[in-house]
Image 1: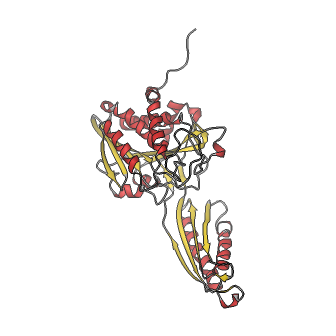
Image 2: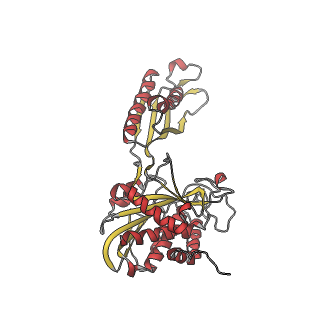
Image 3: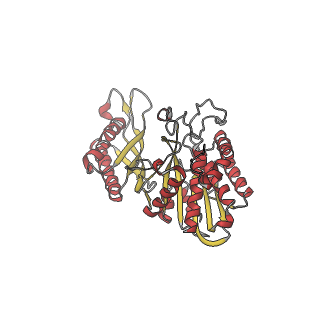
Length: 398
């Protein structure tokens, strides 16, 4: 009886051949997680692996690594990014590759991103004679904190040779391995972290009229901030204002003289971003003034909104359809209000970003990102490597 199954695409077959190697890399990184700007061992592992493939490497932005694969003939330059840092979370998974560093865990899948991109580097290094142009591999530090993408760009990673297109991905626990999701246009929110310091006047708890209660002022401010989106923006404009930290007071019978609030404003559209920052300042200052408190406000410029290029998204979608089957390539209908500093790369060159299905259908919703039980289905790793590699091959041959 003949077998009518279609042969695997060559790049996928090659990726599956090195699956065990990619998985081993991921588990080594997972066992040895490092926080942002401290990815020293991960950086060494990445650099040594790239050099074993005869790629040029250089350090940027502290612990960041840029690998460069020069093709046999001149041409364009395409880049791929993987983030490397972990989170200050205690791992709870009873697995053989559990984190060896107490209180630190790869709970966001950056170990998977790094291992998959190393796999792609190996696939492409074996095909350098077929390349007309260059491939850059960005191994980025510090995505979870201030964001290392901007630092890498300032260090020149997008130049010499100049990058013509850039691609990235993130694991998605809500998608099973074997599927990906692409996005057109704005797909991640812009962020504005904020700090509000409320200065009141301390007094005895029995004599509140002699003080200015910073905690009460803070409570009113937090409550009022919840109405900024619902009552100052058009209902169809997505935005989120989060107060994630409220610290104040030292004793149960003392009127607190100081409160510190920290949080984040998230928006999609630039005009909404500016309007919400303005209304935030007006609201906080107004309440503080009405209650007799002095207010200091700091609103930082966080990550920009991430906007994918339609043509690049079409190209990646086609590549993934060939490798996974078109039925396994989804198009996200709505942006996420999460943030992603890959947006900085997309401000410098056209490109796109995809969600890599890596979820366990039975447990993924119980093990979300940034959770002590988070893990990935490792069957996704060679698929990501194949998509990266074929995207590079197609771009450089176009």
